[in-house]
Length: 207
Image (tube, rainbow, N blue to C red; front, side, top):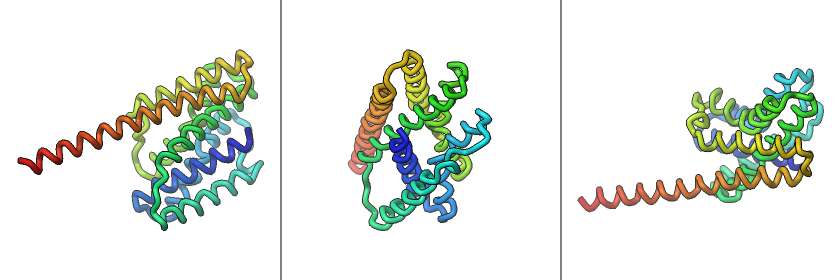
């Protein structure tokens, strides 16, 4: 599980820094975005659970993964290539893995089931919310009720399955399936929106 967690840290740092690059933000904000996206949610979880230490200080591989992601983001920005489909899949994997990590951290502290679910949600999306609010001054995820609903559903289902002592990796696969389904639904909506925009543009040109 540690290697999936490190991969998810890399993915979130990469996606977070690329988002700020697309907004043409200064480099110190790009670096902050990478760190907030990757470890913001987990850090907030550790503070709420009163663990007294941070996972990314105990294991410096997390910092290394973030720095590697920042380097990759810079290279990809320079060559200006898009990997949308690949990173949609990796984003779903990262969200699912972070949800699982948050759930297991709360269960290790013998937290009630509702707190376990909340820690899963916080770890899964907290970093992105912090990044958007601090660096972009917006929290668009709160208005995306369907996305937040899928994350909450994923955390709830994963908690129930783990409490029922289902295998950890089978639980991760179920959580991943829920998040991939959300990504594919978003892809269809984006395709439909682009088609509608092209139609409107065509009619405006015609008249």
